[in-house]
Length: 320
Image (cartoon, rainbow, N blue to C red; front, side):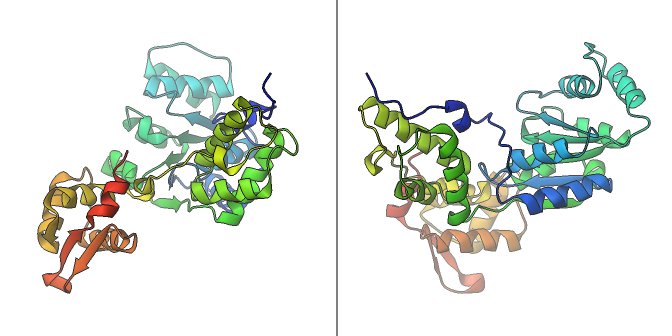
């Protein structure tokens, strides 16, 4: 019979909603202030940085005047509107968006309602956002990539000028979060501080990844009849590309093909291939980051600069 290490698996699941918000109180307070003052907001950041937790806690604390909707589950205008109705009154099924909007407006005529649309990139009809703003709702959009903002039409973007970037957790912050979740999920004495620290290092601030590593390690130890997790149970991950922005990945792919390119020509290829290409200043920042990560080498200065891919490192970063 296997030794039981995982005693509360739900505490390590993606759907778990922690009672306490670790190291994100400042961002939550900031978001609540914007919601209270009717400032439409776009918040973005890499996976596993607590964006959903911030939005859900903020909606919860807005005292019945906010609705949180996960657009990875509710992807159409009709689905979003029905979720809004369900949150403020009895559920109503209607295929008419006009009818649903009319009912929502009637239900909220004496209060200002904020709508948090998490995983906004999954919303198949981004024009939904403009409709909600047009009816006077305060909108908070949560997405992984800054580029998702460009899915909105120009009129809607002009009404959402407040941007919040959620930054990575530090190693110490990651350790505190992972430790708290481990206490809830795992048998006492089944892990040590070195295991938590190792997972925090491996996950590089991505708490979703950290919790999956912890769960996998615990289950592996269980399967081998161990009473305690050791370092050999932690999965080895070697995915430097996870740390790259989408535009950086595009640039890296171009250089993989051409091996070496002058800066101007690389930028021209990037403008052709990127879904939402940025201006030259951002391009230079992306190339600086790729050089700093040891994936690309810059030769020469300014207009005569040539970028060259470092084959060995790129092969390691392209295992996905």
